[in-house]
Amino acid sequence: QVQLVESGGGLVQAGGSLRLSCTASGRTFDNFDMGWFRQAPGKEREFVAAISWNGARIYYADSVKGRFTISRDNAKNTVYLQMNSLKPEDTAVYYCAVKTSYRWPTMRTADFGSWGQGTQVTVSS
Image 1: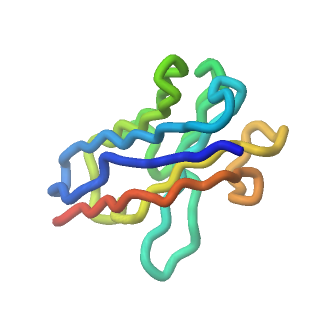
Image 2: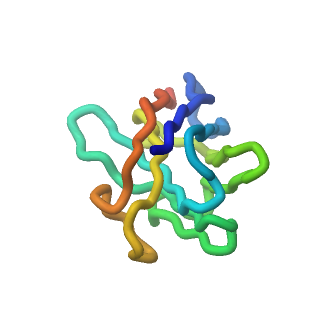
């Protein structure tokens, strides 16, 4: 079982930037593809970005493409989400997760597991 802890959330003005981190423990991190999701109040959890175990394959939701960048450092057991040009509609709790299925690409929450506790991102207008 992998344990995930997200950090780096906060309050930022529209147009600003934040970098989220997700640190893993418990099992060999570099065996796993990883993903970021987010959930706004009253809405379903939605896919944001995913990265393969070695960083060679990456894909994004259309809503964040060109603004967000996912990356990973396997030596630090950490995956990152750099968020630029933030918009009020990016406000949500952001979660990282391990991709548990063989589908690629996939944006389904059912294909991910070992969810972290989340970190709040609030973008003011």
